[in-house]
Image 1: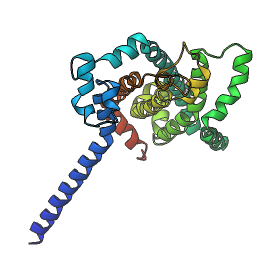
Image 2 (image 1 turned 180 degrees about the horizontal axis):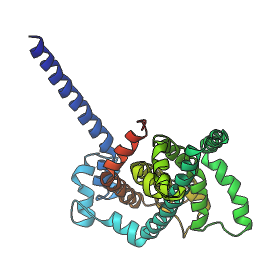
Image 3 (image 1 turned 60 degrees about the vertical axis):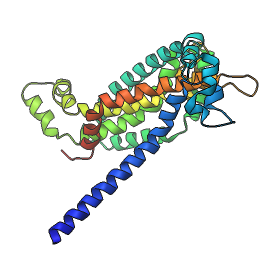
Image 4 (image 1 turned 180 degrees about the vertical axis):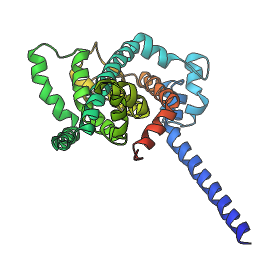
Length: 294
């Protein structure tokens, strides 16, 4: 009887937890799915004040375009407003931000993790304080020299600031991963004839590769989703995707095209889903590796 009762409780717990996760996924995914659906409609349907069901049936979309679905939003954003330029600028900024941040963070994190001096702790604390500062504070400090040196508006300026903002995080995260790797690996490699750097490159980095992937993903998200730095430091021609999307919405003095923004939001969000799906195993391995003492 006790076994049957335990099985029933276990089955009930599985059903309840599955239902909870399913409901949570529906709630979490609904905004993106609704935006994806609405990106193929016209503004009169997706933002209809007369009847919200117009967004489902596409009444006005059919009247204006001849069908319940249209690609006008994507065509207007990518072709007419040249959203592809913003996508290319975003790729350049993100690529170099992640590359520089991971390179410096990996070398610095390894050095601090293997250092026996107390200054390593205070350097990490200083980095943490720097990371906690609002982004607008850091950006305002860079504005004057960038203007004086005629560097404002160019992609390298945004990359420099994003690396400065992101570096303390990568340093802390990679430092914690290196602490979980036994020092015996370094010493064994050096006994076999490797230099310190060869031991780091050939032995340590392959072991903590999931941690590098996880840290790189967070660095990617910081640079990819940034608005403050890119909006203030980049010119109109060098805008990245997030400020460009905001520009589609217009302002109190200027009318925008909200359907261009909806299509651009879907275009900018889709790569994030693909990225997480591709690297999901490395992400999980990296997150769990940071919590296990080697």
